Amino acid sequence: MSEVQPSESVEQLREAAVSALNSADSSEHLESWRVEFLGRKGRLTALLRGLGSLEIEERKIVGAAANLLRADLDSFYEERERQAKSSNAVVGSLDVTLPGRKPAVGGLHPSTQMIREITQAFNEMGFQTIEGPEIELEKYNFDMLNIPAGHPARDQWDTIWVDSEKYDDVLLRTHTSPMQARVMENNTPPIRVVVPGKCYRYESTDSTHEWHFNQVEGLAVDTGITFADLKGTLYEFARRIFGQSRKVRFRCDYFPFVEPGVDMSIDWNGRWIEILGAGMVHPQVLENSGYDSSKYTGFAFGMGPERISMLRNEITDIRHFFSNDLRFLTQF
Image (cartoon, rainbow, N blue to C red):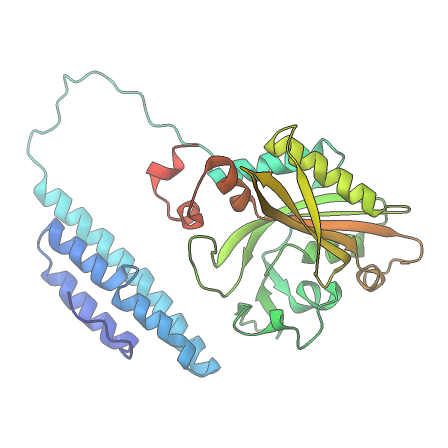
């Protein structure tokens, strides 16, 4: 395998990849090509990891070109793979005397299954399931949630911003919490909603972190809602998902859009494992949405269905959910 060149340009990499692919004349050579150019430690990955050293404008241009190159190389590889398989096919290999086989039946993705189970638990407690946009405005993702300018979450390294001809503050939402503001902006209390959806953050990927993941947000707003309502609701949720005898623990935590804030952990094999963050809706968030914070109170919470599924199903690596490996997906 060729040595990875971190400073390799997109065009240099394209030329090298196309030339090497045209020379691959067997399935083994094709696999070696795939690992060298498209693998986790391949030359395209090395090029993408080097984007952080570029200026922002140059990073956008090179990043877009690199993503286009990935799509092209994937397409070229699939076409060459089909050609290789076709040329290796044995004439008359179809045995028409074989008995019929039961066709493969698809199923729901494990994340989808867990999201449905979570939302059903809250539906049975009176919450309505809604969805929101994955491409969001800075106003809803930050401003209305009491996350001021200068907060670390707004940094280029945490948030994936999107080029737009119409707006200059478009991003891929970093959490499902923007729907708190959108729901309150367009509805009057009482409010009981859960919001499942995909989120995106510019961060490193490892066994417990992904740059894209699912969240389930919850919001309740009305007159007279207290912290006891929050604890009772989440305790009932934990019992429905993890069993009637499950112990839970609440500890103080900080989130800009709630006050007070807590994390909730469950007793899992003798250890306390955090499964979600929650708290009473911050008065400023209520006021930002046009509510009288002296009249209304509420609570909010957010959790990652993949993390809950990892506990329930003893999964050790969150990347399995997005690897499209049927050996993993068909276990559910």
